[in-house]
Amino acid sequence: MATAAEKKQAYEQWKEHCKRVQSITDTALLAGETPAQKDRRILRLQGNYAAFCEYYFPHFLTLRDKTTGEVIRTIHNAPFHNAAAAKVKGTPNLKAVFMWPRGHAKSTHMDIFVPLWLMFQPKRLINFMVVVGKSEDSATRLLGDIQAELEHNQRIIADFGKQQGNASWQDGEFKAANGVKFLACGRGQSPRGLRDREARPDYIVIDDLDDDELCRNEKRVHDITDWVKEALFGALDVGRGRFIMVGNLISKNSVLANLTKTKGVHVSVIKAIDKNGEPVWREKWTKEEAQEYRDFVGYRAWEKEMMHNPIVDGTIFRADWIRYKKLPRLSKYEMLVCYTDPSFKSTTSNDYKACRLWGKIGKELHLI
Image (tube, rainbow, N blue to C red; front, side, top):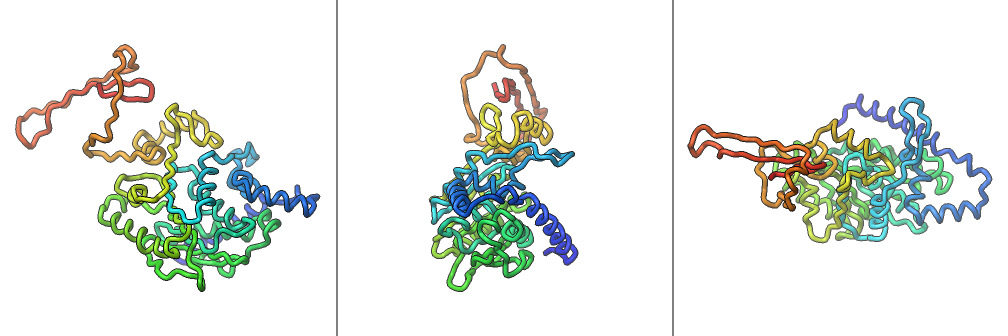
């Protein structure tokens, strides 16, 4: 639980964020717009997710010079962002896992952009949203991002009215002026009986629930998985609504991994780069930037955070992890390394002797 001093600091940071949102979402360029033009523009944005994001959230989708602050370009959504939004909008009763890499805007889209897109449709598609985090404090901070947009985004206010909440995000819940309720919930907390008068949640998003400490304890992972499937999913009206989990696969023993194996769950798996090393979100970063990032963090961190391939030191290689292909001629390899691990004692407690020849060709390592 955050201390009073930490809450005060968080609130001051939130107020600064609100000022920035208000400044960047200025509507001066639309001063000459007629009511008919405004109606047509809003209708177009309601039907086009990519355009909706770029118009209402330029503060999220603008690349700026780190020194001068000047705008360099707009960071457009990747195709997988738009496809995910269409899936969520088009599936009223959805159970889904969006397994996207670090830095690929999974929280931004599923916690902010998509629910607000649903909220401001001609016929509202969301009434009660629950944000679930590792702790109630982390979930509450996510509510702050939503409330900042509803109360300080000048473009949203101009088109849909100021959605002044009846409480502060720091209270863990608030209701917008149009009646949509937002509530924060921490991992493992009891969500039973969640309701707003007769309404139950119809949009639950679970954000980065797993962490390294949790994933080291198989029983805790099992217990939290049960909590997600039973208590949390049970907060919906007998399964009616959108039930979404976002995160990256930091461990094969994780709640995220367990949910992806559950029947009836839509799973979107996005890796940071394709087989040619090209970024899947080319609108955000280049192939060279991706390689620089990989070089700095190292192979294991890259595979874990960006490619959903967590590698644990000291574990046994399983047969289903191994991939086979036709062996190239040895002359094709850029490098060949032979490693020998001798065992000097012939007892049952010693490892077996081993001698392995590895070859490097492009980005691949081959056990020959």
